[in-house]
Length: 443
Image (cartoon, rainbow, N blue to C red):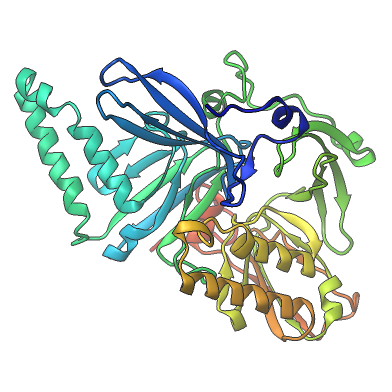
C-alpha cells in the first residue's frame, strides 16, 4: 500500500506533475466503506498537478465485493480572487464535445428548461458538455423506481423532464449552458483558440459574503461586506502589506499594495506578490478612479523591438486584439496589469499556450496542439521585432493606457479613440441602471 511519505510533506510539495517516468509516485490506497454494499473497498488517491486546476486530488473507489466504483476530482489549489461565469450557446452537436472542468462549488444552469444544479451537490469533474447532461440525467433517474411506487405523479413529471434533457443532445434547437463558479476554478474549452469564441461568454464577478462563507474563506459570523480600510492619504504615502498565498505553489507569501500616479494618465492601485519559496512574481492593477464617460480604443502599430518597452496599463475591462493573428482576448480573461507591451504579449502566450488545460495529455489533438504552438511562435517573433502587427486595447471603461514615447507630442504609430459605449458595454460594466453619458436604450 502506497502512502504519502514524511519527506514529501516536509521537503516540498506533495503535488507532483503527472509523469509516466516517475515509478515511485504511486496513488495512495485507503481502505474505506462501500456505500453500495456497506463492506470495505479501496479508495486510491493521487495528489498531482494539471494545467489550469494546478493542484488536484484525483480519487477512485472500487469495491471487490459488489463491483461498485466511483471517481471524482477535487481542486486542492487556492480559490481565485474573483468568481467566473461561463455562458455557452450550444448550437451544434460539435459543441457537446467541448471539455469542461466543473468544480464542486459551481452552479450549472440551462435557462430554457428552468433547470439548475446547485453548488456542492455534485463532486468536481473533468467531462464534456454531453457528459454533464448525462450526469444530470443519471442523477434524476437514480430514485425513480422508489418514486414510481410512492408518488407516481411526481415520477411521471420527472420522466418527462428527463426526456427533455436527453433531447438536448440532438441539438435540434439552440440552448444555453451557464456554469457559474464563485471559486473561479471552473473552465469551458474554446475549441477555436487562440481565436475568439463567438458562442462563449466569460465574465468575472466579485463574490458575495454568503459565497465566501460557503467556500470556507470567511467565518460564519463575519458578515461585514468589507474590512475597515485605511484613509486615502495614508495609502498614497506608504506601501501596504498583507498576507496571502502564492498563486503557483500556494506557499505563504506577502502582497504589497500601493497607490501610484501614472504620468499623463491617472491614479491606479498596484498589487505585487513575490514568493520566496518558488520565486514566482505577479502584479495586478486596479483603477483608482471611476468609470470614464467614454470608452477608449488604443491602436499601436508595432514596427521595431523598442516598442516592447512601452509601459502599459490594461484594466480588467480591457480586451486585446491582434488583427494579423486573428486573435482577440476578451475582457476579464487576464487580470488588470501594469507592465510593458512585451510583458502583456508573454502573458497572452502563457494563457493561450503554456497554461491551456487541453493542449496536453489525452484531451489534446495534434491539429489543436500544432495550431497553438504556431501561435506561440508568432508571439515570439513579435517580441523579437521580426513581425509587424497592430495591437489594439479596447476598454469600454476608459481605464487603460499605453505609453506615448513622444509625449507631449503625438505618437505617429499610435492612435487613441474615444467612443460612446453601447448598451452591451454598459451591461458588462454593470452600468445599465445609471444614466451616464454613453448610455443607450437597447432598441
